[in-house]
Image 1 (cartoon, rainbow, N blue to C red):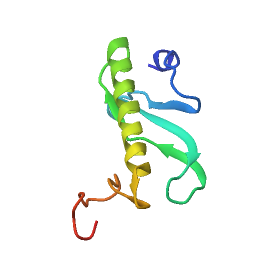
Image 2 (image 1 turned 90 degrees about the horizontal axis):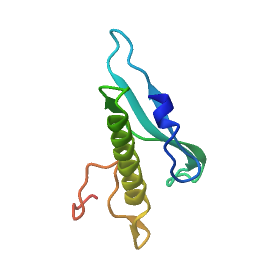
Image 3 (image 1 turned 90 degrees about the vertical axis):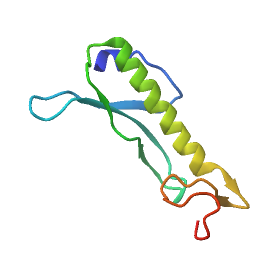
Length: 104
């Protein structure tokens, strides 16, 4: 899977972390990582996406599609954190509150 992920290009600074499938420890996984400023603290730190399962790490099509999905959801998460109205985050991906909730 690593040789497939190395052939994917995206914006500067973005990369993939992967865990190979290990006997008895589950399937292969990948996630997006980016060293960038935190939208809350402003400090530079690793921004890590969620893990995605890759059932067949030798299937080029599956790896590429999973990597695409991981990037898509990572960017959606960042978009939600950065979209603000009157200085307030409208769709906080870290909150269970929905837009319009009294305490959200």
